[in-house]
Image 1 (tube, rainbow, N blue to C red):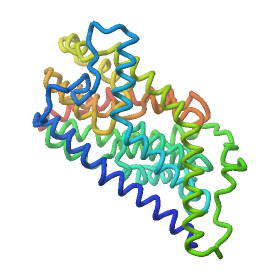
Image 2 (cartoon, rainbow, N blue to C red):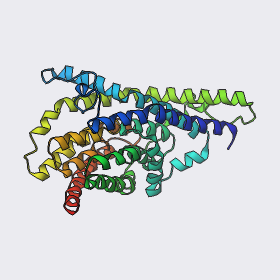
Image 3 (cartoon, rainbow, N blue to C red):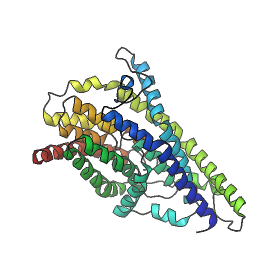
Length: 365
């Protein structure tokens, strides 16, 4: 490993450390306070039971509601998405200059999905931000398994979120979430990845991206730092150019969905048949795209409204998993709409499965 690769690896680790300590841990602490009812500003809670700058009033028109929803979503995700591009740029510049890292991300099957999830877990990001980082890291030659493993590992195997859930919900809810998360990553991801007809991405071979390399190991230390920084900036610019328009589209889709299904909608389904309730909650959770740990806040809403452990389990599994936003971001990387749509369908079915498992486990505890 030459000195330029070492510097790029240090940049990647450094950006991740700054993100976790400067933003993520603090934000998750605030969400934990909200979940436990210890928030200092409960009057500012919005549709997701967390702070939202623009309250979506029932009398607002559909257009105004969507605009407010977009603004709230961007504010809630601004830090995470910014760091996702920054961290993704550092990973991409490292990938283009360190063949061993490229080989790891190119692994397929269960091993590729598992290693991807290991890379995803410490990111501590929601599926939206994890998707930005994952697509960036695997854009050159990464496997579909690694791409999906990073996304789902970051979203579903968030250690802090799992610990918080054990303190708020029945163990049946958390066990169901963990079981179906592992099945999704280790079994479903390798299975659907076989369906990916991935086209060769020429962007990494463009003249601009070809400037990223480690072909000059004889440079001085200062020159190496300058070259590494230039490589990182080129990668960040390439990622931002390709992904920000998709992020805007994904935000619009999720804002539209939130306006169509406000919290009040949930109050009307508590008396339905238990299986129908699971199906409705799974459908809503599957199409949602939420910031990290927001599924816990949604779970507390369901708990307060009197929903069963099954419905809560369905929500906390589907809401942070593969949804509309991740579909938009990963469509090209996964060779079209086929695989993302299959994953959305499986997420919906697994939500129902997690709900049924939680209901069964509730009778045992």
